[in-house]
Amino acid sequence: MSFDALYEAILDGDASEAVAQVNASLAENVCKDVKIMVGTAPITQDFAEQIGADEYADDAARAVHVVKKLLNGA
Image 1: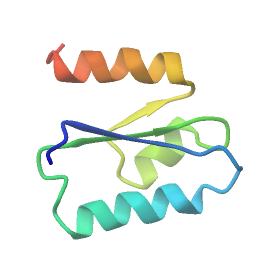
Image 2: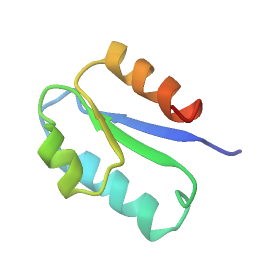
Image 3: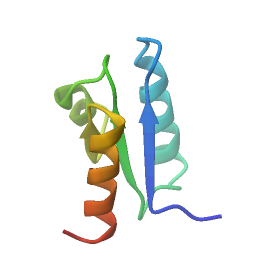
Image 4: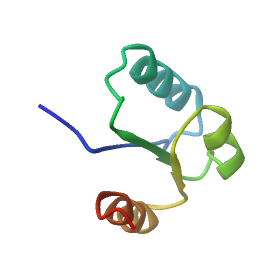
């Protein structure tokens, strides 16, 4: 199985899961060529940058737009 993009949506207000997922992915080097995007209410653009995510989306519609942009190289 291979991925081009990974999106972590936080629904319960606990952003620690996003940190854990990004750190685990980076530590295992499984995301060498994968773009990591996080988002939803408890996550901010600044927080996404702090944890090493490549992109941020504040809702699902924006996430789809950003992933399409990433995959098309735009």
